[in-house]
Image (cartoon, rainbow over all chains, first blue to last red; front, side):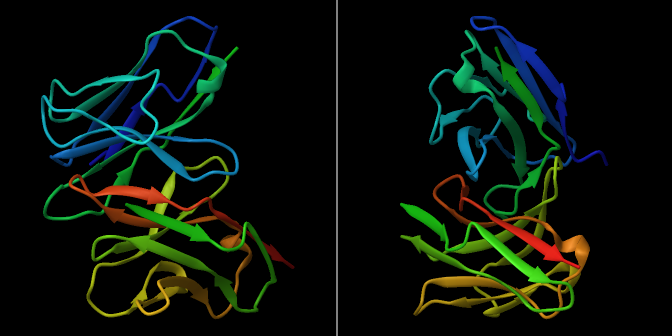
Length: 113
Length: 113
């Protein structure tokens, strides 16, 4: 099993550009999450999904959109990138109601110039 | 609502001496609590978790934590530090309808030779 994978690993954008981060899991997990990590802070929840076709806002959702068209994939989109979105992004998944342990991907380092 | 406070942003110990990383939590629910470790430029690895079973939880690499409800604490300990323990450690609480994780701001552990 690959677990949770993220694509790409690194990306540099200019202000105003758009991009999509892809998260994939092969554990048949119901719940998926997107977090961002900034220096001196723990991870903060951006958006999450409790099943295919459902999404919800987390703590810091502004400037991001998400989609969960397939159970195994969770996409994070930036429509118009801003320097404040420079961060490391982590995806995670969990079984859901039967277990709250989350499994994390390796992260995507995004720089917005 | 839930929150986590890690009482020390940096801890330095000598190799072979005990490690204590302190964490206090606040939760409206019966909490599930975790400790994660992050080595430089790496993803997050689960060290241990508390989910209302035994209050003393043993994790990987010789770490353990004790849940104390009266003190709302979940401190992480290890009897003897190793150089490979140098990393950032996050105390995390889980709660909410989607088992969202709330992270502390992290404690950077330095192990001196």
